[in-house]
Length: 312
View (cartoon, rainbow, N blue to C red):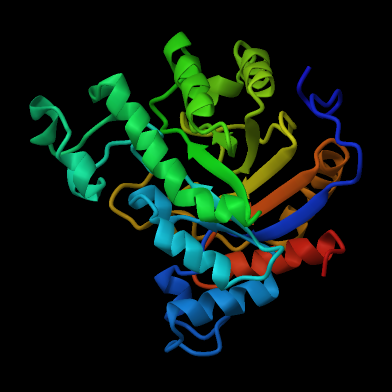
């Protein structure tokens, strides 16, 4: 079994537990002075300041547009030697609709004619060699972080319409092969992956391919809801806290900050302390990341969780 009652991956030493947030640049945070000392801080100053308070951050911008090697190099320069970046995979690679204008310029020129004129491009629309080229372009951009030892996981957050099929498992296997240098983590957003029929196969597959299962805290009762199953399937274990704002969870036409607008109570975070500590017994590293990045909610939750885990 892959649940923590019988951990799939057994680390030899207690894990390094890192607590942080899923963004350091959300406008609802930077437009206030609830964390950063000044609204006028530069991008460089904000990252330096954030890294003085937390040992890890997740980069959300890489989902919307592929990262560049230059920017990745700047992240390396601006943070301490032991700071870690988790990187959200570019949406094309996670099978989300992708506007052609967000693709690499030279890559756009290689799109098949029947694809280039569409409003959105999907990975499935591309020839396999072009898919591989996209994966390698993404890989190359992250090499400065990887070479510096600052790349944590590359997060593959699958869309709700991707559910457990032979094709879905095959795609994850292919991605793992294309990005074999990196530790990939997979977050599901369709409850079927973790239902009674599929959970054993899902977690077993992740373990066999050394893909980290992403545990989640999120609203329940929706097709896109995944239960708070706790498991370790790779050397890195991860929990992402999306908040419990059920009213906004699937609401259309709102920002991501509004969707995840939730201020965790101490009691709610305490529920995860024994779970994270148990994960730490079975993994080398545990990443606990707050995605309730509205205003300073994520900052405050990360600090609270760090205190509860005796990390601060």
